[in-house]
Image (cartoon, rainbow, N blue to C red; front, side, top):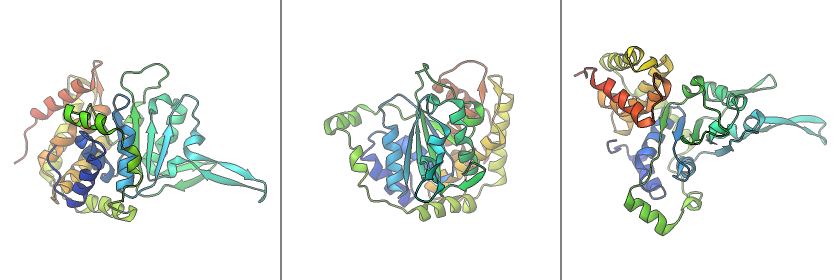
Length: 311
């Protein structure tokens, strides 16, 4: 991905890169997903810094952080919260769950049962939760970072298409390059230091940036037509049985806006679309054959190559 030119975002990336060596691309994509007002799914091997990345973003943005460790016996109320009887007051009181944080890390999401996974759907889609016929609005900004292991199958429940479609992007972190890994081994884990990191922004500033990107970054009719050509290509591709939904088309446009903002532009260019298509599309479509992540992205890139780029 190209170098980020926006000063505030570039400062966050520089600081967090000290704690996440070799993870600059994942950091950029995570921040693009956040400022697009979406959610992020990270699929990668254990021990590569997924939790550290989520904590670092929360600290750098000055936001509250909640963590949900998914297991097969996790209940929906462990996510949303529940009412507890207060003897002294003689009434029930609602105790909020971790979903009421600004940034929520849902670790190993595919280890939770479908019933528990469904507790996240309303929160992710509507930014609210309904408990005992009462609806609670979630704080703004609200960002879910979910992780899953790509190779472990025992005791897991694959995410249904309806839930995958709720994630703005699906990314991997990958192994660090040799020099970065040498530095990590030499210096040890620095996760604890993240908790003392001074925020670069406040929650109000984060919301203002999100709103500004949505309102002020322009997408021309040519770019909209180009993005729809990509969407239609997924719906007619011989490699796919189902293409991108309208929600997916919105995700492509919204992430492109954020990418343009990061590069100090108030308008979207085709390169913004191309840079993010392989992270916003593959998890939203159904492939005719079982493929690994790299093969899926290669198919999406091949579709992009066949579509004329607007001038």
